Image (cartoon, rainbow, N blue to C red):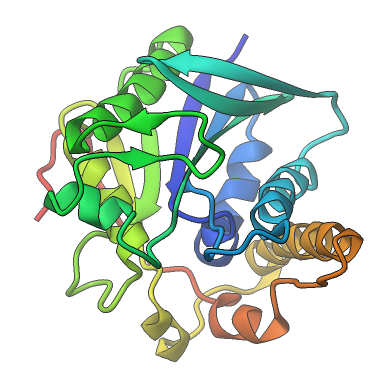
Length: 262
């Protein structure tokens, strides 16, 4: 059915909209291409007021804003013994791992560093026992999707792990990239995108159609989040201030499948 496949692996629900949205839009509109999204954390910010649910719905809204209307299917898949919610629509699938973000001790960073020996999803759907359990699950998702399409060396887009190119980045971004680095070399081509606050200080490098398409997926995300949080009586949305920081910027380092990461 599909001629190719591309992956976007992000820590948070708005990462790719802010830092790689123009390429997502292009990939979603490339014929015969399946686009896979993975969010490793719930982006919950330690809140229990519906914030993480709203952000999850925002991701789906931003994806659907870039593709023709199609039915949405919600499923729970067993990946190496872990129950993971997956949203599928047209040429896309969105995997929601729902791990806690890095506010308290229970974080991907601390799982990676051995500070904690297990990490449970905030909806209690599953627990990862050790760092290898987590990154092997990511690998299984990518490999299952890649093999099903028959793509030898697809692109994986994720936050840049390199602190020189991407200084001061969020701990969840870095841990997610480090998990990918356990297995992506020699099989996957990588697009490591800058995703730290310092990007706001860099020169704009997007305009025209690329800027407009990135803006479209951001606005769909922001509107959906506002609608859902308003239902809960605590309206929140992705602010124009954040868009002003990052909207007209996109910085990425590319690596072929047989190139080493530095």
